[in-house]
Amino acid sequence: MNSYPLLVVTAVTAEAEAVRAGLDPGDVVVEAVGVGPAAAAAATARLLAGRAFRAVVSAGIAGGFPGRAAVGGLVIATRSIAADLGAESPDGFLPIEELGFGTSVLDADPQLVKALQTALPTAITGDVLTLATVTGTAATADRLAARFPLAAAEAMEGYGVASAAAGAGVPFAELRAVSNPIGPRDRAAWRLGDAFAALRAAAPALPTLP
Ligand SMILES: O=C(O)c1cccc(C(=O)CC[C@H]2O[C@@H](n3cnc4c(=O)[nH]cnc43)[C@H](O)[C@@H]2O)c1
Image 1 (cartoon, rainbow, N blue to C red):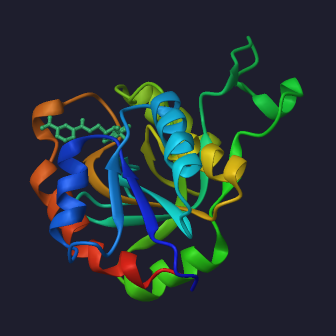
Image 2 (cartoon, helix red, strand yellow):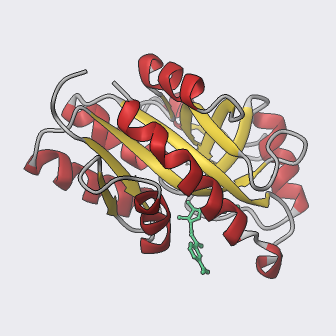
């Protein structure tokens, strides 16, 4: 492990506070960087340009694919995938790879994934989708589940944070606590308290990351 601090970025302050509540002061730098991939990428790039960090973790709450990730549970990303980066066509969605403009898939650092798995043995591991629009219908949920058979969760920042990390040459990981099932929008049913409690309980694993 190098001596630089770990950077943990969340979307909103409530997520950052849940992570900080599980840490000793000074263990890790935790910053809220905004909602969505663009805000997350821009703010993370700025943070990485201003100070040396040994790694960056995108952390926060997420939707879980029913039958793959339970509400209140944790998901460690193997890959962060920009699921809506591409083009629609009459024959279905065309990812950016098929348009010839780069990649929609960014791998998490294998050493960070392994360290998170060791420290958080009850967490599940899978792909985490990044979307600019929260899924709110059964049809979209089913379509995403079929397109991404290894996806356990969706959130709005991971791919943006991963892009900034790749640009800075810093290892990246994503850790999510599931607040709601992915499907028909029912904001009142989001279990924010359970997800924040899971984030807080997971936080002591963060300073152990290489
Ligand atoms: O309403 C509140 O009190 C509140 C407190 C803290 C956070 C929120 C958010 O809405 C956070 C937005 C954040 O959550 C991720 N997220 C959660 N569920 C999903 C989902 O089903 N699909 C996509 N993203 C989800 C996302 O990363 C947002 O940045 C509210």
